[in-house]
Image 1 (cartoon, rainbow, N blue to C red):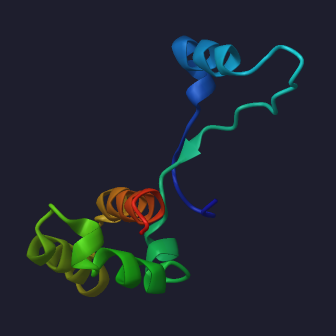
Image 2 (image 1 turned 120 degrees about the vertical axis):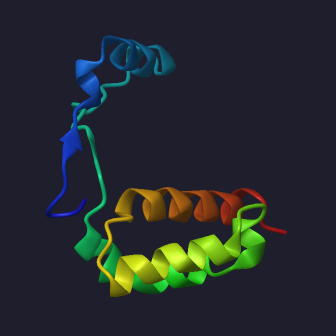
Length: 104
């Protein structure tokens, strides 16, 4: 989890907590919900930078999305420090999901 980032506690949304409990039998003790944190720009520019390049610059993984726009977004994020961290995080998760689920 990033050191800096805003956290949104999902447990404050009643339907999420109920859904989560409904998915697991009552005999399973679930850990407390801690929320979901937005990725830190420093984290995406630092430790995750190689993974961002590997996944987001793979046109096959990003298909049907526009690779020119993705490259431009990454460049703006890195060079101009425009905060595209949420956008890049979503693209990264999409690419990783596609790589895992559609691996041949």
